[in-house]
Length: 298
Image 1 (cartoon, rainbow, N blue to C red):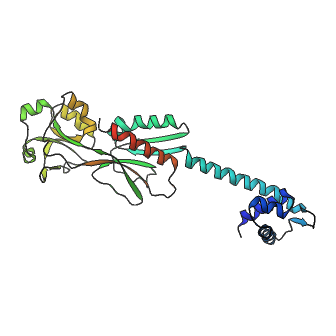
Image 2: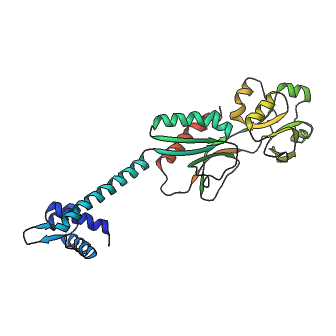
Image 3: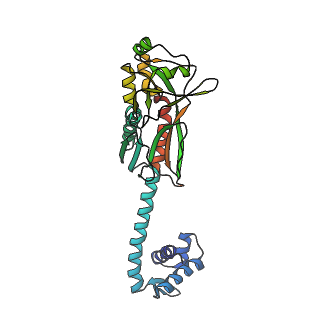
């Protein structure tokens, strides 16, 4: 038995004063409405309506049940409206994770701009350079910068390409010389990204891939630290263009090995697989897709 549909039929009959009028309002036949009410009475083992040839009216039990039905149906309608608003307009809490430097330089200002458009949002923005499990840690949206990315139960939506640049400070290049081939990097101080000193294999692509084991004075899992070290003349670094574009323009850093660029990487937005994706995630992904393509590479 569809109890809610039977409750709706019963309340319509009480309000309309008859089965025929209730049937017209519900878009059903008179017999269908009558069957719904009879099924409800059988289920409750209680007569809800007095039926005569001239009119239909609630019994005492029917009147009490009618009042409760009105409250239940009103609560249900309110719940459905609230859910509709959530699906149509971003509101509620939104938990976001992103890499520290990209999050600070680019994502945070965009999140603030997005929040200014949707005042009913509460955002928890967590920035770190730790590889997390978005589902296990409860993130609605996770940004990653990688050659490719995947995860069980996750959709990876590409936001924008993220070019990488091999560069060093002019002072370092004057002191140590400028390499012209990836193999020459073995004779240079290289500042490499990673969590361990063993994370020291660089791949550059010319006519064919060149993988080189580099060494140097610094290994760090934060790009901003590597950038500062490179500007200080400590060695050669590979960093996203969005981190060093201003340094290159100001000649604090100089690009090298332009004929051997690092493999392409992409900025991805990861979110859980869900047929009924919430409006807050959908709108934010659309917003970031439009904005990051421009801002990430300037």
